[in-house]
Length: 389
Image (tube, rainbow, N blue to C red; front, side, top):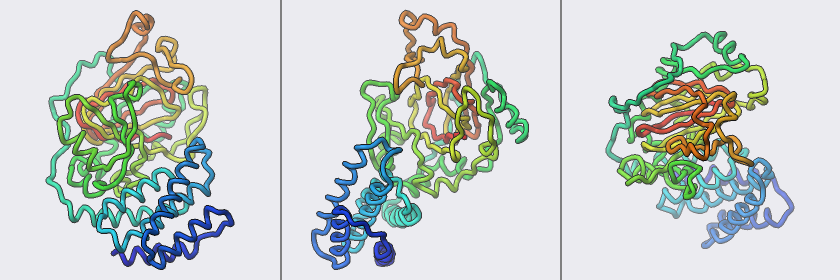
């Protein structure tokens, strides 16, 4: 396998577009060192990776010039090429390439990067099989729901479009919409999840909520995340694989779900929905009991699919915003109010805000309209998918 990958990368770099700057000159020198199998060729490669990362950090991510993103992923591929024939630590190979791919987005290299990482992951898991454990929901998860969200069987496409086109559509729980997803059964199996992702690198939020003072983000291997936070008791320590496009990174998981046709409607724009995304935005949310998304709102229509476990959600209409104490500045979409510990002296009007709520269970889908405030808490180990459209 390694010899085949080496030749694949060799052909790739022989076709690389040349630039006339000193950075490319260093890349070209490193490439020639790799092809001639020189010792210590990683020194130049690591210097290039560090330089690319430092340069990328100078920009907001949406403004990073494509040539820097491309240089980073190409250098990551070159490092993979340098290590293939001599490195017996497949885990290290995956870490280096996955990290470069996450940071750069792998422009124009997505197919080859995902192909290489899939092959390396299969090789890694073949040597590290784990016992299986079910993450299936417990039947005794229960809460008193005072103001339930309306639930229904999947409506017609036309009905759903008309509903979304209202000036202020309401949330709905849709039952039976994703029963055909392979993910509904597969993602309950720890062995399956580890078989496709054990050595892959994922960004993890440490802390129960992003508003906590000690909250931070950390890159870690998926297997480490599972072992530390999903499969063992953590004495209150919580970590969350949150709002990450895991399905772009690991296509095997993407193949386990089918985006509902509802996500391809084109709802009319209004004061709460000012711009459609270019494509359906898919994000994974995977974590243990106790993870929290504080009261906040998002700019798009959202189908939130509960694949594994259950979550409690409380939602407030945009017309309740004046009672919810939004923060200022970059976090203006997040409330100052801690739903779990409301300070009624500091936020006296909050008690007057009207809300609806639900426990979202395995196989159910919650439609959340744009700018509806929502608080989310995992009642047990939970894996769900948000589909913004």
